[in-house]
Image (cartoon, rainbow, N blue to C red):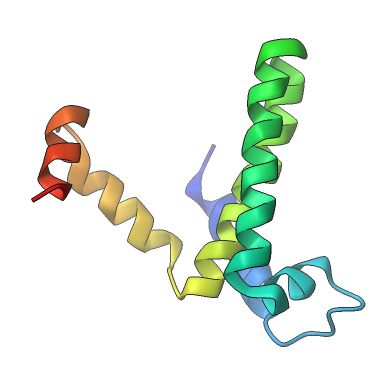
Length: 106
């Protein structure tokens, strides 16, 4: 996978800001703000787990794509660019997960 596909999808999501919520699912999510988007992220995350436990690789792949889409919608709502997240991941690269978590607790 390339981050290009995420960037292209993010561009489409951004273009839906202020669009007619009756004709665009993305515009409808954005109009609902963080509470509506967050609810969908929770649902999609649960569906990824259920797929992993009961349905297998193809279902996990499909549900993961849904989860990523909704996460990108949240980023757009919050004014976060994909590069911001990629930069944060790069900052954490090579750091133990325990050390990274402890650095946030101070």
